[in-house]
Each structure stands twice: as structure tokens, then as C-alpha cells.
Image 1 (spheres, helix red, strand yellow):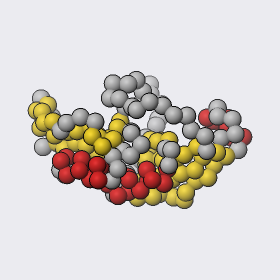
Image 2 (image 1 turned 180 degrees about the vertical axis):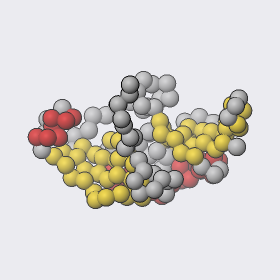
Image 3 (image 1 turned 120 degrees about the horizontal axis):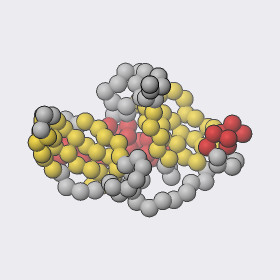
Image 4 (image 1 turned 90 degrees about the horizontal axis):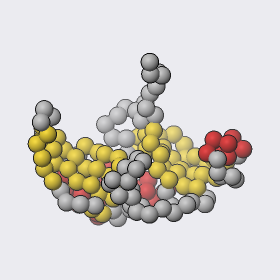
Length: 151
């Protein structure tokens, strides 16, 4: 039997959390939820196994949810470990997705705000679900963001 659970948030570690927060606010209409965080201490070192960890950031309310909905948590550590550019078929968390009114327009907004495209916009009929128009994009730090519209 599964444990009782409720989805709470997804975390993005950013090189510049303030820049990434501005991107998600400007492009997708996310809104800050709660105070900015400035976290450190033995409790944090124990939780994340990063010695002398110090992180700052904020939670963003995701569009389409009320005040108690899940959030996008964007934090920066004082010392970050760089990784290669994420690719769609890499193991682990691959992307976050937003339902948008117009995929072409949303991709242009992502690009105008400092992001970019991963591939090309495509449309396909998914049996039993409907017509999907979709594209993978990147936020300014390279994280993959799916932009989708179902009809």
C-alpha cells in the first residue's frame, strides 16, 4: 500500500537564482510564495550531505494552482557544482512542463527572456487523448522546459 503523500515542490539549483526567478515570473506568471530563504546550519548539512552548505532562494507559486498548490523552488548554493547541458534522454529529472495557450508565442517569449529552443515545434495526434502541439525549450540556465497545448 502506498504511503500517504502530497506533491509539494520541485527544486532547481541555479547559478543565479534571482535571474532565474525573474525568468519564471516574466514568462510563465509564477508568483513568489513566502519569504526569500537564507538557509545554513548543521541541520542543512545533515539533510543534503553538503558540508558548510549555504543556500538562498525562493519558492514560486506555479500558474494554474491556488495558494496551496505545488511550487517551483529556485535556490543557489554559495558553491555550485557545474554539470553539462541537460539533454532530453538523460537519466534523472528531465524537464518541467507548462500548458500554454499558444506554443509558438510561448517559445518566442522564452527566447526573448534569455532562454532558447531545444528542438522544433511539433504536432501529433495522441490516440485517446487529442492533438498535441509541443516544443522543448531551455530557461536561461539550460534547464529543459516543455511548452505544450492540447486540443
